[in-house]
View 1 (cartoon, rainbow, N blue to C red):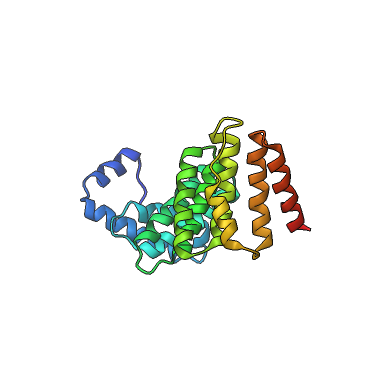
View 2: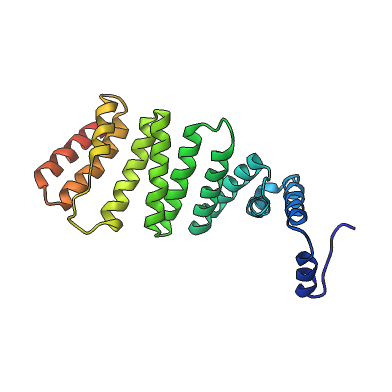
Length: 219
C-alpha cells in the first residue's frame, strides 16, 4: 500500500492516538527520510523539518539542514515569523551536534534575529543577536560581531528604546579598536550607526565627527 486515505479526520486521529510515543516518533522520522529522498525535497524542507522536530533523538544534521533551507524559503516569501522559528530550530540542532563551528552557530542565531526583527518581535530578536555575538566572539570573528552589533544598535535605536535615550556603545568601540586599520567597510558601517545614536542623544558634534569618519572610509 503506497498511502492511506481516511473517510473522516476523526478516523485518522483515533488511529494515531493508539500509537505509542515511540511508534509516532518512528513514523515521523520515516516520513521525513522518505520526503528527503525526493529529488524535489528542497521544496519540502519545512515539512521535513516539522516531522524531524517532533521526533525525539531524530537525525539532527538532517533536521538542521532542512530547517535552514525551510527558513531561507520562508524568509524569501516574507513569512518572517516562520523563518525566525526555523532558523532558531536549526541553531538548537547545531548546538547539539558535536563539532559545530561557532561561526555556523553565530550565523544561524543572526539569521533568526534578523527574521524576528522583520516580524517586529524585538525582544526575541535581541536575544538571538546576543547569542550570535557571543558565538562570533568565541570564534574571534570581528567582522561577524560587527555585523550583528550594527543590526542590534539599529533595533535599539528605532524600536527598543525611547528617542534620545543613550545607548551603551562599549561593544561597538571595542570592536572598532580591535579592527584597527583593517576592514574599512565594516568600520564605516559601525561608525554610521554610532553617529545616529549620538545624533538622537543631541550630541551633534560627536555625531558629525563619526559620520565624517564613516564617509571618509567609504570614499
